[in-house]
Amino acid sequence: MTGTMRRWARPALGWSVVLGYPLLMIIAIRSVQQDANGLRVLWPAVVMALPVTLLGRRPLPALFLMTGGAIAVVMALGPGDMMFGPRLAVVLAVGAVAAASRPRVGVGAAAAAWGALVCAEIGWRAIYGGGPLPHRIAVAAGATQISFSALLVAVSVTIGLLVRQRREHADTMRAQAAAQAIIGERLRIARELHDSVAHSIGIIALQAGAANRVFDTQPARARQAIGVVETASREALAELRRMLGGLRASDPGDDPATGLADLPRLASATAEAGVRVDVQWLGTPAALPPEIDRSAFRIIQEAVTNVVRHAGVDSCRVTVEHADGALAVEVLDDGQARPGTPGTGHGLVGMRERVALLHGDFSAGPRAEGGFRVAARLPMPVTAA
Image (cartoon, rainbow, N blue to C red; front, side):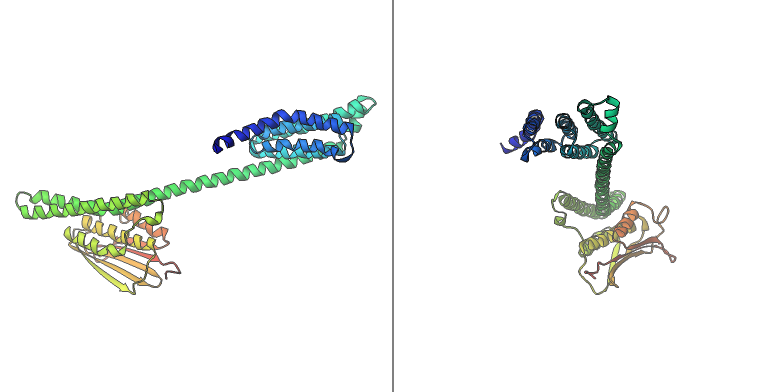
């Protein structure tokens, strides 16, 4: 019921102003004509303020009503001091129209309102001022009064256009920020999917191929490879469920993200695929911010996955070092060089993006003595350091 009343209240108020404004203006003008003393002289200005309720939603009709009221006041009471309030109301309405409408509409409405006011003042003095018409027009609407009205309207239009320009700029910046946030979130999801699934899928592909080759000649080894495939596929499924649960969570902090504590599990899964991972911890362990902990693990995971898929070796070395207000990770192998240009590929691009987001340093490439090296240095926040 409340929502329905609110939905109908504003249109009802608007139509009440539109329909009642002419009658109230006539009553106010007749009251002043009968007795111009006391507070009655303020009644036309009070009635002129009624269309202000429409400025926020319908600025053009409000300007039309205010201009019509000002013309009625001029023609009935004359363009004396009593005209200052109606003129000011029209000027404010002109600014509201310029701020809410296209520049061409705002400037056109301002010119029309100014022309109507000037014509009303000239017409009143031409009708009631006495003497020949050209002489009365020249005397009544002198250059000073016309220039003053034009100046007020020009200032109001300028302010309205500036307000509109600032609002459009703010809307553009908000749209760009929203687009950047969407792109950043898509990149984050892509990195998480790649890092979490690529390792398990790589192991599954290798072990499935090995099982297929020895299925007839060495059934025991084939069975062992199929067991590794089963384990890796279950881990990949669990990782996907964890990630989807984090994406569905209303609070991003509810995501149970992985971290360096999962390195033993990673080493065990990689060993089952035939590559031993030797993990070395250096420095004094310290509590890590979640984003650094997660990124360090994902970098190691992707680097180890590349070793399993491309290096052709049975071992690699992982070093994790806490030192000098930063966390340094390094993955070394003695295998053959990666195919293609060093430092390319989705995995390396994802690692480089993770490090860049944390303002760290990243390097990946062949070693002079053979093999491949991936290294990242992630600076710790001041409080965590």
